[in-house]
Length: 132
Ligand SMILES: Cc1cc2nc3c(=O)[nH]c(=O)nc-3n(C[C@H](O)[C@H](O)[C@H](O)COP(=O)(O)O)c2cc1C
Image (cartoon, rainbow, N blue to C red; front, side):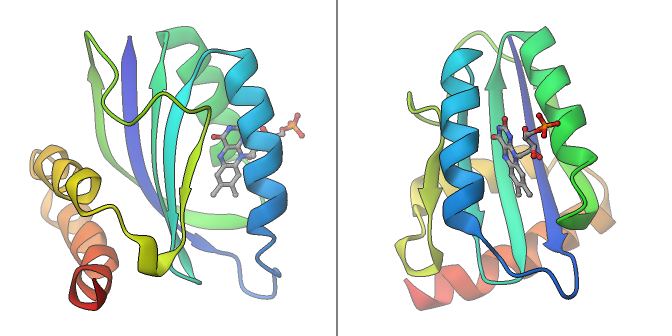
């Protein structure tokens, strides 16, 4: 299996229809046996996507091409033996419901990336951790 974690930014002028994104992503992820966790802070997204490599690659390619967000930075990309981010098709976390255990695990995984990626993650996670 494969696991990808990234951060991205809502494109300027796009109304954040997170309910719509979450509903369609849940349906599609369930079809492809993908598990995922998505955080959104009102401006940026942080998502972990995992499952069979081919399904992860195809879905990630679609997500990366989605015009609703941009400046996508991949924080981690690795082979996994078992899923780490839940069993749901897509677990959605609004800002104040930050799942600190999941966030901490993403921080550990992102620690293997470069300084720019780590800065991207840190700037996303810090306000959530402070608010929790
Ligand atoms: C932040 C963000 C996260 C997304 N997460 C998923 C996801 O987990 N699974 C999924 O199938 N689509 C996800 N999407 C939607 C895809 O980008 C795409 O719109 C959807 O798969 C439909 O693609 P299609 O119109 O080419 O069929 C996400 C979009 C955004 C902006």
